Image (tube, rainbow, N blue to C red; front, side, top):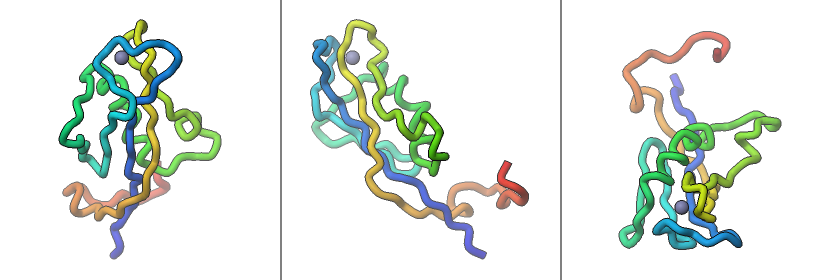
Length: 114
Ligand SMILES: [Zn+2]
């Protein structure tokens, strides 16, 4: 039985605005998300406060969404510091297939998807 499913891989990148960045962000800094893994480039740091604002959105952005869902259209996340002009852009950069059995010991859900 096929138990595969597909998730989008993500790139989260620092984007500047016309307002100065007061945290340690550097425009162009980024991290990648593949499945449950966050991958940081070797010479890159990322604010834990900014990361805490971004993290709740990542699992939704990895998944297929309804066309009218705001989560699909909105991809810029503001830095949680109200004095900081940085925003973080979430971009889908391809997909990766996973096996349900390799991700959980729970049985496949039977039913209408609810
Ligand atoms: Zn900031």
